[in-house]
Structure formats: structure tokens, C-alpha cells
Image 1 (cartoon, rainbow, N blue to C red):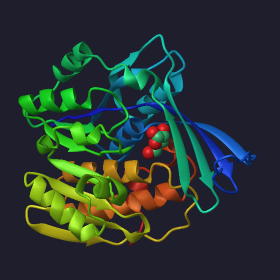
Image 2: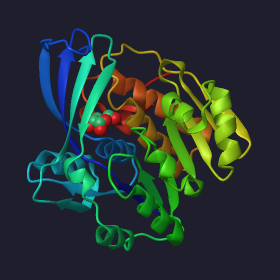
Image 3: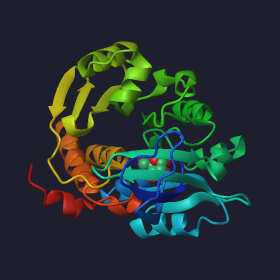
Amino acid sequence: MKVLNFGSLNLDMVYGMEHIVRSGETFTADQLTRAPGGKGLNQSVALARAGAQVYHAGNIGQDGALLLETLRSAGVRTEYVRTLPETSGHAIIQVERGGENAIILYTGANGSVTEEQIDEVLAGFAAGDWLVLQNEINRVDEIMEKAARKGMRIVLNPSPMDEKIGRLPLELVDLFLLNEIEGADITGQTDPEEILDCLAQRFPQAQVVLTLGGQGARYLGGGQRLSQPAVRTNVVDTTAAGDTFTGFFISTLLRGGTPAEALETAAKASAIAVSRKGAAPSIPTWDEVREVSQ
Ligand code: RIB
């Protein structure tokens, strides 16, 4: 069983800030770090560091050598990453003391996925293989429809949330991983249990994982309802916490773990990620996660 992650690759410019800049304000950053990121790339790195065999599909520009190298050194297969004559996607990330962030995204090459590319990539996968998607590339709806016709298992992290999510064929999703803001946008509910109930009612075929930051995570699937507390840590940078959670949750299921085991592993992994700076560089390995006690 193979895992295909069709997703974004971004060059992240991470600015350390005393506070996140307000409208009309000019404010000097304490620090600038350039690092690999993008929800797609981060999730592929997390999947691979957690032990899954993952193929990344997506587009980079002429400036994307670092992105390709990051995937390769994490053990991700990169034969479906195309290099285009444009610039790679990038993100301008402000991280304030306390670890919260604000992100400006520039789509770049991530927005140049073609129908031919989708067909070419999906030709390498079969029924039962897993497809992981986020919302930082174009044609996500087509990828979902074509993959579902092949019998692939579809995992959607509807992030970042925008109006395109509402137009996706969400009834094809087997596993949703989303945070409370995304859950509230899709369901119109704010209480975590109501978000889960509403998603389960609308998408009875799907398992749902709802992440709640410092409040942990909830799961609802196959009639089973689970709650996972957050693992306490010193928060330095929350960037890629959700991506790390997603990669470790899926990988644990692929290793034959139960949803409860997957939640616990993912909570430990994202606690490590938030205690370190950056997106992809902050993602731990499976061995590091096993050393964490709850
Ligand atoms: O989820 C974190 C990621 O969001 C960053 O790496 C940035 O590139 C944006 O896509």
C-alpha cells in the first residue's frame, strides 16, 4: 500500500517578531530564517519521518532545489515533483513570542498543476493506496474525483480554509484532519463535539480528527469517539504543528495502529514540533516521538 501526497512546496521566510504586525504598523523583526515548508511538503516529511513510504507530487520553480533536497533527505520519493520555469511557492511567516504565527502565502508553481500531470501521477497508484491532500494547490477537486474512481483512500486536510473547500466533493473523503476553525467553517458549529457530530452526519463514510491546539484533539469514526489531551511542552513556534500531527496520525494507522494510538503518537510528535523553530526542520523522527512519555 503506497501513500501519495499531492501538495504544496514552499520556501518559508520566518520572521521572529515581538508581536504580529498590525494594520498600518511598521515593525522590525528580531530574526529571519529561510527554511523549507508548505503544508504538502511538511506532511510528506512527517509521513516519511514516521516511517511511511510516501511519494510527493507537486511543482517547484527554478529556485526550488532546497525543497527537493529536503524531501529526498527525509526519504520521500520525488519522481512526481516537476520543476517549472516559474518561481516556487513561498510563505512569509511572522512568529511572535509565545509561538503563535501569521502567514502570507504566495502560490507560485503550486498553482500550476495540470490535468495531464494528475493523470500521469495517478497512473502510478491503485485501489487501496492512500492520497493525502491539502488546499495549497489548484485542481484539488479533480485529483479527488480521479483518485476516487481508482478506489484510492482519500485524506483531506482542508487547510488553509477558503471558499474553494466548499466546492470540493467532500463526500469522497475517507479521513478528515482539520482544526476547530476549519471545522467551524465547514459545519457552522463552534463546539468541538457539535463540529464532530455535524461532520459525521454529513459525511457518514468518513473518520474525522479535530485538532484543538492546547486542548488536544478529538476523533469520531465508526461510532467510536475519542479524546486526546495535548502533550505539555515549551511552545516556541506553532508552524507545522498540524502538518506534523497529520503525518504521524496517518503513519500510525498505516503501521496497523488503532485511532487511539494514532492520536497519542500524533500529539507527542506535534508537541516536539512546536518546541522547535521552523516548519519542516521542526518535524521529529519516529524514534524521537517514542521517547516522549505522555
Ligand atoms: O502549515 C505550515 C505551512 O503553511 C508553512 O510551512 C507555510 O509554507 C504554509 O504553507
